[in-house]
Length: 386
Ligand code: FES
Ligand SMILES: [Fe+2]
Image (cartoon, rainbow, N blue to C red; front, side, top):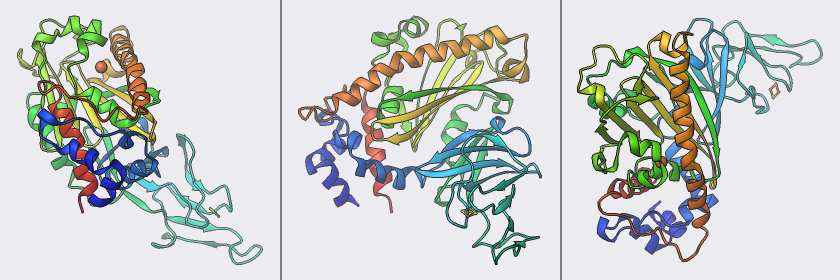
């Protein structure tokens, strides 16, 4: 695998991403443009890790179904009639037709091609005309492992659903431990999904996170955010195993961050002035303020394209969905939409800049961008891991 990565990045490019910070630069251009590199990331990172699959609240009722792509694999999340949430590969066992195209509500899945029908639990129910005209068969207990829908491993973290295609990732609780540890004073059982914002971005997915974890650009790009939390309270952050963490104590709350909405129950005064953000490999980013838990995830679609979703969780049902707090809630959405939009043209410009053969990954700031370099290193480590 190392030889394969070196052949894609070039020997020098591979080594520079792993060099000591003073000499280091970011990943070289092929990591952002090569189709082969992209496919390897999908296979070796996104199909092996825990991938955020959505909020449980997106499929609140039995029969609700949400399709999504996980590392290039079509998957569907299903709320079963027994109340259990399951995930399946989104494919009919007959001729490989995709079963579900968009979020929907179902009693059963009937394949549009030859009408094989499956239950919400994935069990095959019927195959009309399979043995000749009028000679179908029906199944009381499913068709067994060759005929039932293929299950995908899932797990939940406080209303966030994750999928793991390979079935081999460490348990999700272990994966999330650095976040759980650092948020000991925050009662995460109180978070409720308030909705999501979608962005289509013409850049490689990694640039989203390299930009996300880096505080250096804030003064230049984000005037409102700089006013809320100026450069002199910002630090580079650090990795704790598979999770990057950074944070500050902000001088005063503002609309969209801490003001006008309920806070986590029992929060200390100290935690009520904390802003903390995390990135758990490979793509689960979350920002925590006293009134929210905001998830940012990018889904790779092509080397130069990704789909980004911001899922906003607020504290308690009234904050998340009630009428009384609608204005304050909308302010959180507006703040995040505006902030994210300030980054998008930069992400797309960096993607385009990586078409210049004279650019080689750049020169990083040893003060600010150590964690960014570590991210490149972790990408390579995840791809190389057996
Ligand atoms: S492909 Fe689904 S029934 Fe034939
Ligand atoms: Fe930014």
